Amino acid sequence: MTPLAKFKTTAQEKDWPQDISACLIGSCTNSSYEDMSRAASLAKEAMAAGLKVKSDFIITPGSEQIRATTERDGLLEIFRQAGGNILANACGPCIGQWARHDVKKGERNTIITSYNRNFTGRNDGNPATHGFVASPEVVTAMAFGGSTSFNPVTDTLTTPSGKPFKFTPPNGAELPARGFDAGMDTYQAPPADRSQVSVQVSPDSQRLQLLQPFTAWDGQDVEQVPILIKVRGKCTTDHISMAGPWLKYRGHLDNISNNMLIGATNSENGEANSVRNQITGEFGAVPATARDYKARGVRWVVIGDENYGEGSSREHAAMSVRFLGGAAVIVKSFARIHETNLKKQGLLPLTFNNPSDYDRISPADKLSILGLKTLTPGKALTLRVTKPSGEHFDIVVDHTFNENQITWFKAGSALNFIAKANNAQ
Image 1 (tube, one colour):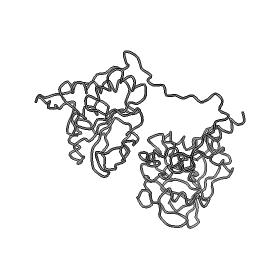
Image 2 (cartoon, rainbow, N blue to C red):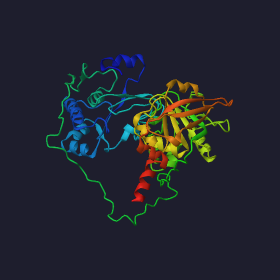
Image 3 (spheres, rainbow, N blue to C red):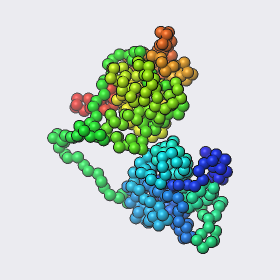
Image 4 (cartoon, rainbow, N blue to C red):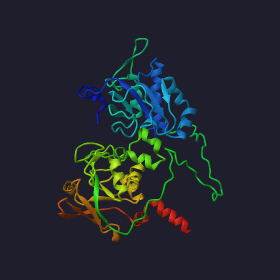
């Protein structure tokens, strides 16, 4: 975190690009009516002084209700007149859906957003983009300043008439005085009789694929499986299943699984998307190595660090691991939502009872997970680690399965369990 008062000097010291190429507000995170009205108050004040935005200014309403209400009340028109560009009320650049043409990939530049995350390359797929997060009000004011050296709290801008202009504190309504406008009703109800409905997807489609149920638990412990990757350091759901251009495959599990864990750092070599195939001895891409294990009928395990799976609640980050043959993900600690997503796909999210046991495991080890036949809430499992020499030792791994989630695991996934329950009715 950098206080606004120190942003100028810190940017200079760290050689961050000074010109702000784009300022973006909205998406699901900070686009309430109050957020938008406060940002609009700043834009309106600046325009009254004759100013226009110096950076690209992009606004993404967070919902159809917010879009319709802010359109009705003139807030979006204020942004347009200031030089802003209103996007559809969708995830948009927040999740990487940004058809950006003003900078080339690899070109250093600065953007400021009011989005919820600024992982490397998240917004525009450019690892050279410096992404900063601030409130919608600060982002809006910075769009008029256009530079990291501008502090909207203390600094002035020069108007076309040559006079100095200084922002006053933003103001806005917590709720719209005329109530919310729900906007367009786009819901399409299914037919009352669905018995004759079938979903047909072209077998040649690269973007859509019908899901096939995952196999149910075979009733046995996981025995002597390889480690696909021992992840070192931060591993968000963006590292596990990148967004951006990959999102076009969201409806095709096989294709989107080609991005599985390609952003994670391999502890063995410090590289991303390069792991040793423990059967062939050759290094290859993570998804390709997983596919090779799967083709041989070999399940595998991921070893992870602290807060594994933080970030977006991205189900593909769990689905791809299951689809490509994963059996378990064993880490120091989980981000809660990702841990639950792994359970829903029939995987075993486990944590080291002693976090230092992470350091006792090497990528070439074989792992066994013992005690699954008596899997019970609150009862730890045993992880047997077998070294290439044949020597082995046992460590304790914990889980947070409740009774209902254990039924998901045994059925092969939560969807399998639901389908079976519905068929029984």
